Image (tube, rainbow, N blue to C red; front, side):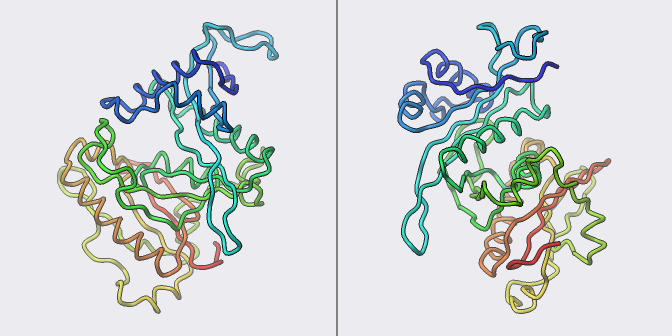
Length: 309
């Protein structure tokens, strides 16, 4: 596959292309689509919209720009906002949407778009990008936490209210709000040409880290939330003496919720209470691990305070 071309989008016809791509990424509800006219108003007033294109035929000249027939396969859209500090409000970039065409996922396009966003926002003199995502989506967690180096200690219940698209309908729209501190050495290392080697589950086990909510598999092959945690909410003093914990989520939550919406809701409520508790006593999401296999498994790593692995 030819390497995608990235460029800033500013024209009305480009906004229409992004609008159509949203319908492919989040099918089933036009109500949740950001319309072309609003995209255009945002980018003409400080917003940032970057598109990823694949030419119909790979260009022989590496410097050649994509032709008008190039296909829009992904985009990232955001705008300037504010966040509160002890000294008052400061400016940040809020990344509202990242979408990749369903036929071109798992090719690194999302990472390229976020890296371009990182470069542009740093040039604007901002030090923070925030966004939200469903904490039960393993693919998103792998990109946001493991590859990009974002961190999270904010859990939002029903962040978008009732959603009707095929990917979200029928479940509470709970979200992580992640913080991407774009000038930190942590993020710079993750985005460099010599990025940190991803940690495997074995690395955490070697350091004595435990899974506090190990799932179990029943005859249908679907993972169920742990019936009992390795520590309890009324033992916060004991819990906070543990520097790092692992929290399991389904490796394929979309497939699981298609199989059983009730099971999807069970996982939503289980992880909601667990993350809210861990954030409340001082833990922060700092890493993510995916374990392939016959029954693949996914885990968040949460550190307490300033501790690291």
